[in-house]
Image 1 (cartoon, rainbow, N blue to C red):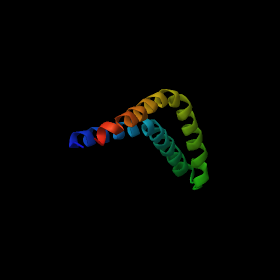
Image 2 (image 1 turned 30 degrees about the vertical axis):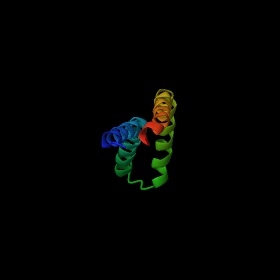
Image 3 (image 1 turned 90 degrees about the vertical axis):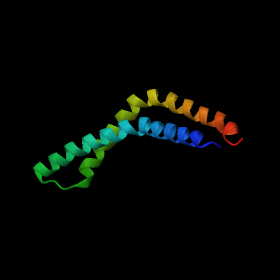
Image 4 (image 1 turned 60 degrees about the vertical axis):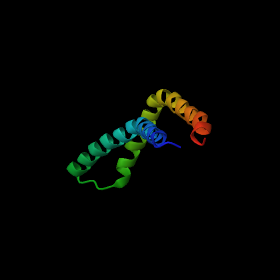
Length: 89
C-alpha cells in the first residue's frame, strides 16, 4: 500500500466528516451562543433550557441538509468499498 493512497483516503474521510458534521455543529454553536447570552442576561442557569432548542435545531438541519448529504455519503462509502481490493494488493 502506497503512502499516497493513505493520505488521499485520510483527506477524503476528513472532508466527508466535515461535510456531514459541519452544518450540525454550526447550528449547535449558534444556538448555544444565543441561549448562553440570553441565560447570562436573565440569570437563568438551567442546563435544560439550552437542550431543547439545540435538539430542535439539529432536527431541522438534519431534515434540510440530510437529503443532500446522504447521496454524497453513500457515494463515498461505495467508493471506499470498491477500492478495498486495490488497497490491499
